[in-house]
Length: 465
Image (cartoon, rainbow, N blue to C red; front, side, top):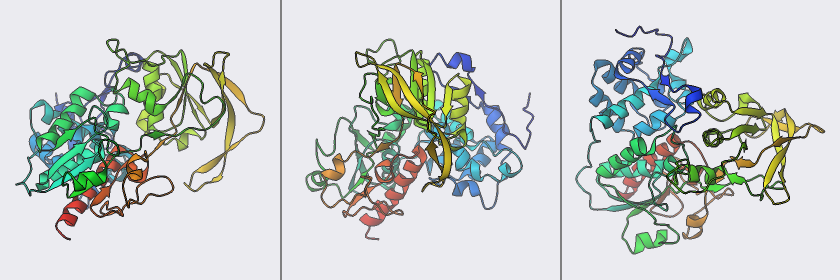
């Protein structure tokens, strides 16, 4: 029976029941089937001036691929997406569409926007299931380009350069390619073997070589890549993996993690699986400090490992930087939120183990530099939350290893590499950079957008433009 479409509302997408999914690491959102995707595609207005494309950092021809879906040409839809994105199955799952493409959708003015992200996910999944690969590279130009980091920005830049005909090698510090896609984002949001690994294989199918366990700045420097290995240009996409802390008393207690470490243990090192020996503190009560997507990921991971979880965030729910969908899912799963609350001390027992966290209530004052109202402490409002694990999800900064071992590479006060916004060019000729190492921690799709711009910038540079 055909699906009846309400043009003002999205076709609903199936999800695991909250009580069931809170106890497993299977994917929460089940995505559209073909009939649902076809029905949702009919809601697209096919605007002559599509604002959704302007809202997409990699500039996918959104009306174009949705029109193909409406016609039943799923392969054609995938081909259109593949012209702009090397990781569509990833983006369809983790991009903040509500503030980007869907946030610009004309349908959303009087009703709900078209479910662009879910349609992109369907298209990419359909292509994978039917063995469809991206278009291979052009005739080789005979010039070598190195990419440092196999995360979303590096993979995107490498894919674009390979399509242009360059011989591209990615150097990855970890034992597995994928960057934050494999060590940061949990399995229940982004399946690793089924989705991430297959997307990486598609990039390799374009002719990209990936060398793992290769630390630029230690195994070899940027200078040596250019001078000894003959790379004509280099794209730095090493991310921002250095965690931030609050520097409050008790932060060195046993049972305090950075979200980066906690999620790496759980995801890349598979601590959530019984057949792996990776150590991780499966506490009875966990407090996660922070309000971004990483905080939600850490909290929902701790919950699945058997802990009662409370998120402590110093502003109100309105200011939570995490995606609305992730906050909604966390609440559905039973995670508590202590909002307008800020830690002042982590409490230890006589053995140096976490026994709780002392917090203070906050109120919102005047706006700060970010435009959000600044949280101000309420005197005398301190209280304690009992816990045995604390996860600090306060953001990350770039590791200075590469910038500290590369001559003539300018960085700013936050240790981010300074680049030209349009091309990704750095102060060092032939060296480009983008993603979190240039902007600080941001979203997957913004990192991919930087990779696309840098690929064009590198092509222009190598062709004397």
